[in-house]
Length: 179
Image (cartoon, rainbow, N blue to C red; front, side):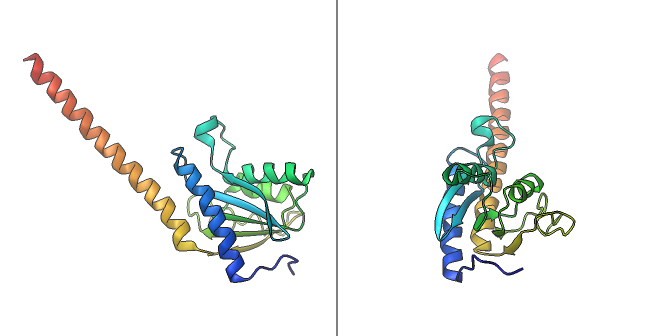
């Protein structure tokens, strides 16, 4: 499939860095750090980051938030002639939203081995049985995109471990006080 929106490697990295900035916004809110931007004619028209915890909304993934903003910006539910840049491979829900929004191109950073629906577990975006297919490119700034996720989950495990150890010591201190 020939793409109208072809970007140089430098442009792809620039827009992926913008998506990484969105992912960092998720970190500030203790959300899984995934970020997304939607680009049309070289201009970002939608930005998003995970906000499930912040708003208690299961569907507020980075891609969904970026699609919503781009729809408002374009005053159209169809996001033709756009490219979606996302730090981590889209999940099933987001891949469905991308197809429904008629986004023709997705560029993502790192694969998602547990939830990925753009090649890892499923390949919804390029499935020929669907009426809308998306050109997918993976691996732009892959190491940086994977690292922000790995660091988030490692720090989460470390916090849990520290909390658990802290609770145990508090319990022991309380017990020894009662003796």
